[in-house]
Image (tube, rainbow, N blue to C red; front, top):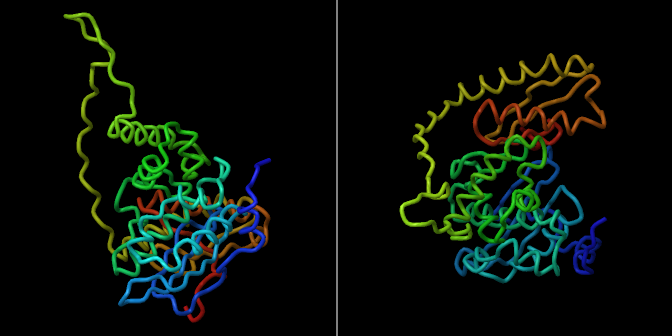
Length: 305
């Protein structure tokens, strides 16, 4: 059982600024419902003064996610965009009087949504499309850049801490080696790794032997829209026999950028394990495309789509 501060409880039981903001001109959306956490942050920014005049959120997640989102909106209303950009996940956690280590990823999600919304306001491309860094955790769509930011801002030193703060490696665990590589690279860059040991003159310690530098790999060619759609269709077709063996099925309904809408049918419709099935479809598509995508149920298709 986790212990929560009174302020976390206050923002969970009485969240501030929850709901849609029709006048929003800055929107940041991070996470995925199929991964268990998702946050949409909407801000109304004065184009002349750059001041955030209003902010609201819609989130899918635990009590910590709701409290972190609520706190974030309270923290940024009245700030300029540049002032808000300086807000980190640590600031959100401190505003709440602290969060359990296992729930710090909720504060990271808030900070990432804020960066995404500001990028949207400035007309910049949000880096959550994972073109900034290598995709490390395919289960939760966490890239190397996000891990690096979490490690740097929060002075993380272990794999377990990285999982608590980002959820990376918290599911199938096949990415643990990659996470440790990113962690070691950041620690080496910041000087947090232990200095090499001294040895007697004329001798060389094992710690002084550096590994061979990895060969640079050519960046994969960007898929055309047709190639991308074909890969999605092939990946889903490959998954269907496995789902059909359990009496269910899945069909592709629509593709909207990073959002891929599918419909579960048969035994999968209304099944208590449908979220796990959706997560499996997402992991399959991320692997097939080599990019992060969000798999959403067809019921969430925007009206008129």
